[in-house]
Image (tube, rainbow over all chains, first blue to last red; front, side, top):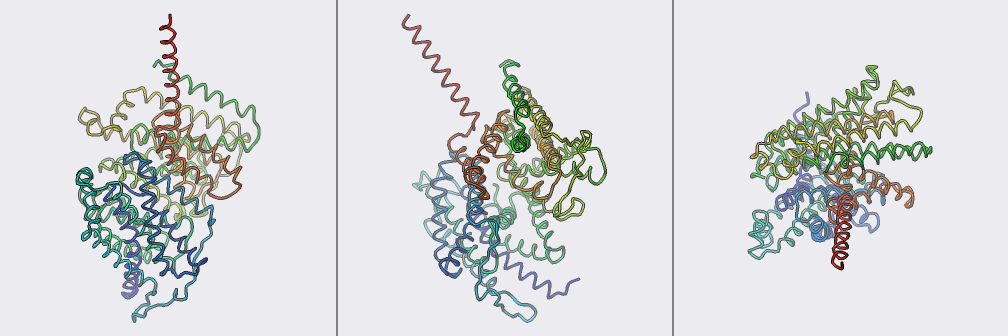
Length: 290
Length: 332
């Protein structure tokens, strides 16, 4: 058996991985909550954002944390435009079509990345990549602690945006009842696009937090998003606190499964939870009836 | 529509395609045809469930891979005859289809949820096949090269073209027959409105289960054929997302819910894919960029696919003819 401090270290590491999962899952759940559809292009968006951070660093010598200030609004705009001018008009208002259009976009973006950057694994060098904090029984990597803090802050800000601002109120209104919202004078197409933009901004932040310690390939985003699907389903599709708690939980489960069963089977635990939740309680832990 | 008119175009097309290996001997061409037909077969499987039944699976790799692995492992490990392995492979993938269908349809999963759960099942299979020694792990499984007809291996690629054509043709005729049968009507009812279908006395769960079992068996046959042709398999080929995507895009481009749609879609996509490679050179992923763009464009501008466009053109021609006739009659 493992000593308690090893297990505790694994739990802490899991929580930090989970916080990045949370950001990705927040974007996914937000879009689901409003458009009632899974955004299959979420993974490709994450990959694109990671490449953006990579290019910002190698070409413009920009630190990934500084790049956050540029990449986040850029991806908000990108997400907004994608929903407003591509996904929305192309899907003729049918849920099934949105599913397929986002799938088509994900294939397109992923392979455009492949054509541009080839399938090499790329990472960036930052001086603080191996800085760590000594907790006595274990070391925590500084970039991951930072990621944890920023992720929680973003979740908090997103929560405030949704509850305290007019735009947030409009987003929640459209999520609840889009016809009613339209009758009340809310521009539904605009709100859809804003929501999509917010989702893309979330993965852009996640990309900035990931890049100091992680690598990027044209398929890098997919692994994260499959996990994010699990989190979103577990937490209840559309639920913000659900996504947050689900993400931290899944991060810990993955870390512990990796410790006990080895890296390659660590993910199995996640998928089994995923299938089990889908089959037994598809509304998740915090979700209303979908 | 009478029976001859329903089946005639399909049969004629198949017979014509059967002539290709007689006229063309180039291996690259025959390779392309066999591969495209394997995709078409997988897509025909998807179309039975997704097109006729309206249940969009994002994880048909689970069935393709099971058919492929079963056929390969039965031969490589247990010395089972290749033809028997082929049949067992189809049966096993149908069984996996029934199981996944039973679990997810019984829980009432539809739309996004069904897409996700099928995706997850395929991923679980992929990770397990990649990690377990039984499937050869990451190194994959080889089928021993021994080119004899009793081993389902042929020195001539033409024979493979005919076998693939025969399978695609069989499924094509089966699909047309389903479309004309009561089962087809039930499937359409489930697709259009599940609650209304149930209210009218359609056994929704039973119909969906029958559809996914059949669908999985057909896609499993594509997997089994794949392994007999290439004699090699690993987890990313068998259970990779690529085949789930191929199986889904072809029917949508060709014409979802039409018997010929998946075949036309597969030929169009792979024809275009080869052309792009020809012009753009060997840039990796460039053919898939085209697929992605085509999928979005098809949904935006031709939601009924190529078959829908053809039908529309035909109707317009008929309408023109009718007006012409009226004009002529009017002058008399």
